[in-house]
Amino acid sequence: MLHREKAEIGVFLTFDEPTRPMLREAAEAGLYKSTDGSTWPRLQILTIQQILDGKQPDYPAHRRDATFKKAPRSRPAPAENLTLPLLPGEG
Image (cartoon, rainbow, N blue to C red):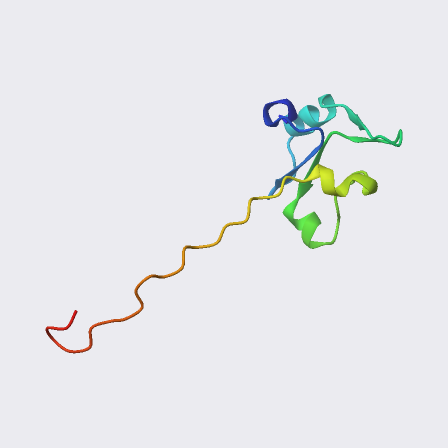
């Protein structure tokens, strides 16, 4: 899964408890070795309920900015015409 996504480390969120095949794939992903020498599960599986209960994924604290992809910011185009015809035949 991580290889497909070109990610070093990842978290998979699921509504239901993970299945055996999901747990096997997570284990087969191995460990991520941080620049400080610590190791972390390369693929972690958390349920939505665990997140709601306050559980957080385990990942290197000193690299938090490098482990998440950030979506590009976008702004809608400004409206060009804000006037509406009020009387029949206007506009």
